[in-house]
Image (tube, rainbow, N blue to C red):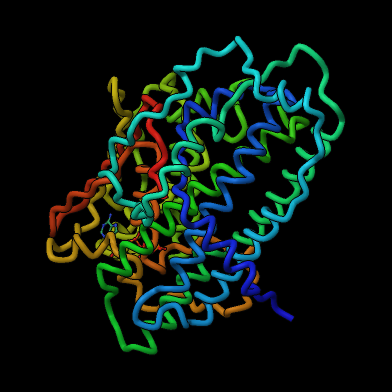
Length: 434
Ligand SMILES: Nc1ncnc2c1ncn2[C@@H]1O[C@H](COP(=O)(O)OP(=O)(O)OP(=O)(O)O)[C@@H](O)[C@H]1O
């Protein structure tokens, strides 16, 4: 039988949703260092045990009140149930009973890290409130409380050993996060399915601004939740430390050229496979091999792969699959003080000016047959298609903005497209608050 949220649970969800989310910056996430102590990890677990339910609660509320019958679509309801179920698991996880002495020690800061490093600065890619669904309820207490005790990174006094309950709780908490992360693997495709159900039922071709900005918020929030979860699981599971440049899933030395090269190979492979080509159009990469910066390699790979796939598709479809030679797509990487910018220039015929705003909307695609998703399809089996949902660009832009970067597209209809991927290298900017 499928899981259903009780009225009592919904009440708790409403309570959590009245608190604002607290943004975390890349730099704050990286301050945990290679091997955080049990006490520091416990403090982070405590933060997440409140922060994640707050973020999940906002999503449940929003999913349940979507306009125009979207909230009634079976796939949308399914996603809302996943969020509510994860909320319940986190809020019902028993906390360990700690002695007063241990509790006091947990609140005592370590002298090692200067506190100014923990401050997150406003995200330069986001206007205030752009991805925020929280309009404020006049509850000053919640903000006061967040500042005092709800700190994500709080290195604690590690001069003595910690009791085993802490370690045990950290393990249990990480296991819960793991289960939640897996449950939510299929959220993007299931929501896409929900929007399709709605479009078919309402005979809509294009989604309106309301729904577009809901989806932007929703997916941005998902990136943040998964980032915090992924980071915490990786920090807890210290058996995997093999590379000293990694802190959790963040790589302090992300070599752009290596990642771009890999994304090029993957995109070309998918292109050859999809069109049955002997050789996919070539891609030239211009990048200093030593260029590296702090980033999440998984995010960068995703953005590069998505934009490169688009370029290859445009080149093949504009010049014809039976061509022997195609124009070369160029990937140029430039290093500035503020940003690392990656430009992807193709000669794939460009996009008509009138269609440019549409490329940022969900579900805009020029693929004739959107992949049909069986509601019970196995999400872990889901392979990246060449194209199909129209999610590639809007989601990649959210990834870029999440850490203060951006994604821009300029097209010359009749010739080709330039995509600019700006990656902010200051790394102190906060997540866009949800
Ligand atoms: N480099 C490009 N040249 C020409 N058209 C492009 C280019 N990039 C994107 N487009 C157009 O924008 C549309 C939306 O792109 P987007 O990446 O969001 O989705 P998609 O590629 O159709 O599907 P997917 O969700 O699998 O990425 C594409 O269908 C295509 O028509």
